[in-house]
Length: 147
Image (cartoon, rainbow, N blue to C red; front, side):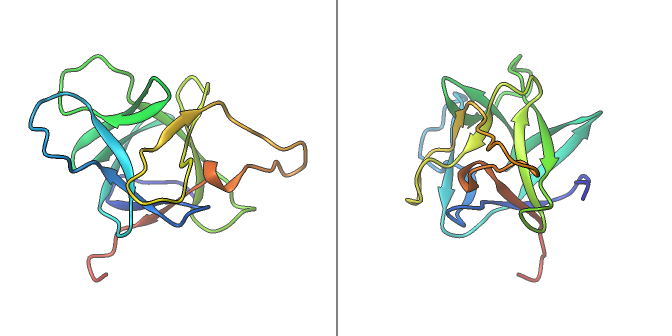
């Protein structure tokens, strides 16, 4: 399945936890954490060629120092492009988000709520089709206004 521009709910396959921009009271323009939460919020992916920009409340997601953040600065020079690969043999709407350079992936290291999403080297099991740990996989489903 191809992802088209729109609003989506993103949750981790292993923990079934949704992710969103952290809601801490910090009013600065410093990057904000991307965390797991019990209920989901809207995320807006936009396509840029073969890559996507994942946004939480309008702020683009990026990786830095092994963690995932969003930037509130529109003109920042951070790399916000992600390659989103469908993993249909694992389930409907299941994807593997990686950076455009494919050096790592997004992972939810623990099932606890309010855990920051991490960025780690990709783990692939030696099988066909390939095996990915569920902590690396994300369910990206269209947002339904009636939910």
